[in-house]
Length: 424
Ligand code: LRH
Ligand code: MN
Ligand code: MN
Image 1 (cartoon, rainbow, N blue to C red):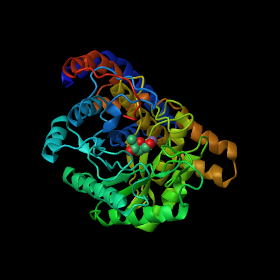
Image 2 (image 1 turned 180 degrees about the horizontal axis):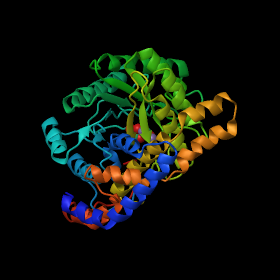
Image 3 (image 1 turned 120 degrees about the vertical axis):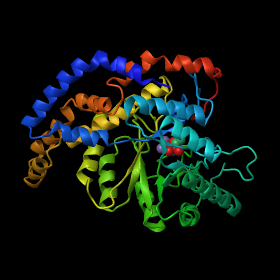
Image 4 (image 1 turned 90 degrees about the horizontal axis):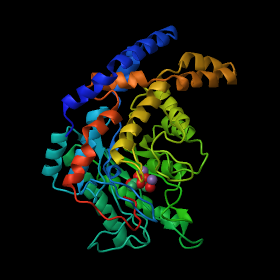
């Protein structure tokens, strides 16, 4: 969809500047005792999964304003995801949401091969009703008071595992909307007992090399109480289910000002950090572009991840999960993937020996200055050089705009009407 010659042409415009900037940064880092090539190699090896649902224009419960060339189905979505990876070389996998992306396995595999992508964690959906479904999720799914509804939700999750196993995925992410809207509406303990019993049935269906990620979220769609509301409940679930169960941290699913990096550290310490849904927020589950509001917080999360690198069995899954309401989703996802890599690169620059010495010497100011030294460094030349050497674009946005991809697909994909709300 994006020709190599186009990338080469666009790169040619930026190459001299990049080479000069990269050399200057290399000299600067060498003075700090850091080998720029080693940082670049780590950045180049780092990938973040794109959510299939992210390439469609998002919306709020009030309205959705579609862009042009909206993907019609999973195959269009995979084309768009392919563009993101071709230009950034940072998003080698796609995370599917079922049943939104349901399609014959052979077709999914063929398309993924054509666009050069693999499949990351599968996401189940028991927060919406589907046409023809026997039991409604209006009052819950895995924790529903009715056993038949719970069984239907369990069966759907097992279907997702079976589909994912054929696609080469290695994890299932469960997020449920179950909760309540009124004090007294549900019995907290009985509801959570039902959830655990149902989740155990899903866990029992996991292949030996799979992981089950449970994703907590403070509120919404339930507004009084939510069954898996915070990392404490999430940790209890992972403990109850067993070693293949871990917690997924969506950055937008916490109360404002929550110390998310500390939650990350706690989960790492006890072997229960499964992965991330990266996004940014100001108020709640805003699903804003990763790093757009508080890049320092993203950096602090990566500071914990870099600190934990090399721990036995430490392999959290990294995915984006955001909603693009006013931008071209491909552009937002490209920029966000680069933001995640930026936070990683900055965290790699932190002098860990100096930090430990400052911490142990109770030198609060030096400790925090040590972090800031990593965060303040402009690592863009490292990111751009990693992309260039992998065949990607020095400036993905500039190459994408030069390609005219959006206009091309807009001519092929019929325009869709805007209107009512929705999350995708
Ligand atoms: C819930 C959530 C979860 C869903 C996705 C669409 O807010 O973060 O990950 O699967 O959004
Ligand atoms: Mn999420
Ligand atoms: Mn969310």
